[in-house]
Amino acid sequence: MLIGEYIHTIDTKNRISLPAKFRKEMGKKVIITPGLDQCLFIFTTAEWLKVSKKLSDSDSDLSFLKKDQRSFNRNMFGQAVDVEVDSIGRILIPDFLKDKIKLNSHAALVGVKDRVEIWNDRTWAEYKKMADKEAEELAEKLANENKSLKT
Image (tube, rainbow, N blue to C red; front, side, top):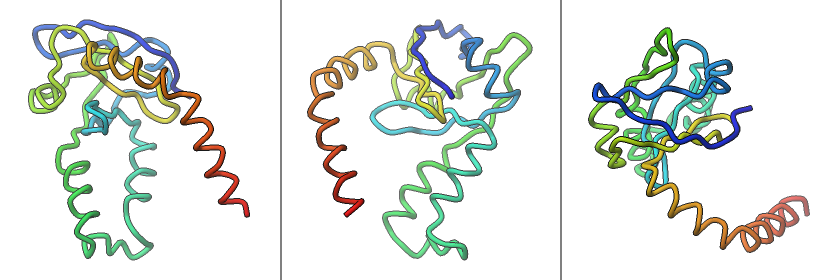
């Protein structure tokens, strides 16, 4: 399971080191794609296959027939890149993805169970403040949603 938060430097060649804890679980090749909430998602190749399958609407994958799904899939798949993890644990973030979330010299890498998220470090700090304030309310809402699903 990928957990924890790390602030790392992005070098002049757009490379960032994956934390050692993440490297062990992620392997030598990862997929980087636009995420949600102004971050990037990093998936292992195995997890990317699971995500791909979930994003297809059915066994016959007719997801292209639904406008919203086409748009979302174009964003996720069309801008996804597979990157190698080098011998010292760095990955290259393409310029277009770096620019998308306004990465500068530092980034927050956040483990979120089945993926790692890359955030502009300032955006991450702001998001954490907001999420901390709403944590109890969100927990209550999720608990109520789970109750209604079971009945």
